[in-house]
Image (cartoon, rainbow, N blue to C red; front, side):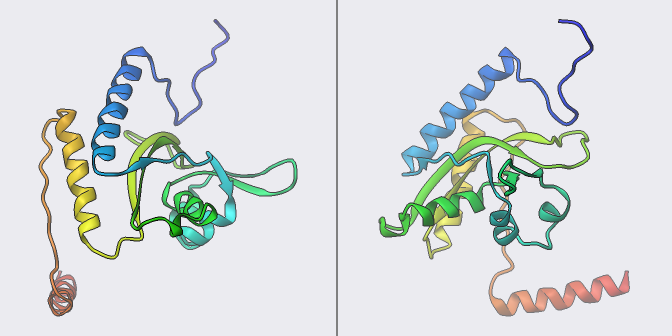
Length: 188
């Protein structure tokens, strides 16, 4: 086909070789997440704009600068999803998942959209994979998610990946650290 058409700025085509790699990623993620009790969720590609303004925060860069927002034919403000947490929380509440045994473990994979200046490694349309453990009170849920991501990267054979964990420790240790950091920044 001629005519000079190209993929829109900040997007790209997924050609067969890359599509096969993406399928391998999805298969590995499905196996790892589901083995840990996570179930797949898919939310709409667009949501009411207010969901992101409330869920992400009106003062964040995502809301102020990076959302693809438009009015539909009914005059409603809708936004192409820039992230997954707010739509997943909406689905959790809307479908009564709070009545299920907690935590509710969900994983997702799909396209997301951010209206940012295209540059190396950053796109306006991108795919993202992730997981949420909603209703977990324990920091062990965070540890589990970190471990699952590490498992996924190792399963895929991603080179040069090293998992390093850090902590500022107790509240008292964080206060001391913040004082030391402020002192250092004032000096330099």
